[in-house]
Image (cartoon, rainbow, N blue to C red):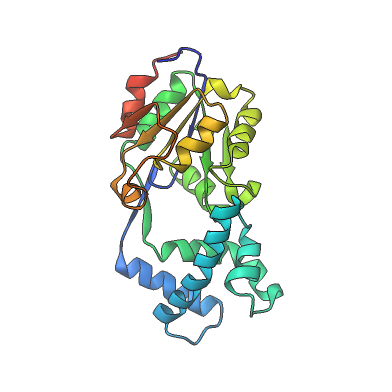
Amino acid sequence: MKNDIKAIFLDVGNTLRLVVEDEDFQANARQQLAELTGSTMDPVEYVDMLEGRYKVLRKRAKEEMIEASEKEMWTQAMLPDLPSEMIAPLSAKLTRLWRDCDGRRVARPEVTATVIELHQRGYTLGIIANTITETEIPDWLEDDGLTGYFKEIILSSKIGIRKPDPEIYLEAARRIGFEPAQCVYVGDNPIRDVEGAKLAGYGLVIIIHEPATLKKYPEPGEWKPDHTIMNLSELLDLFPPL
């Protein structure tokens, strides 16, 4: 293992947290989403309608490697037919409910212990995540008592660019004050997470084996990870105390 690694950046979705289906939870999210926006449609049909608009938004985001803010997402893409002065103040809540329509997001059981141990070993920790939400991830870290262990939280919804654009990785390295070669990125996507970090010059790229991700991306891209792990705690085998 390289002995000049100083910082470890982690992805969130399918890396630190997983989505667990919960029909009652999801039905409640659909109902709240419809009520909050004044829709009289059946909540399931309403969400299906919004899903069509969301797919258009995501296609553009992936092709252009950009991310809309929550306000832009809801006023321009998801609900452009409603008054922006009504929707804009609700955008953060709408984003939370939209994500809840997929299920509950729960941390992997080994996350807390692994994050704390890596921090205690002297590594600077950060997050780089493609996400449509601006507050959910910071709130989750606060709720789980992990906020103080991460020096920087880089969210595509806040910075406006998304993985695999190498600039999001370079910006993360700049913010913590280390060279990219001194940084590691840990993600689950064998294409997007590897390519961007490699192009940015990160010292190591590690992929956690996640079946839900591999269903969408079964084959690795041109760029290969340096390591593949099955459990996040395996990072402790790779990174001894500094």
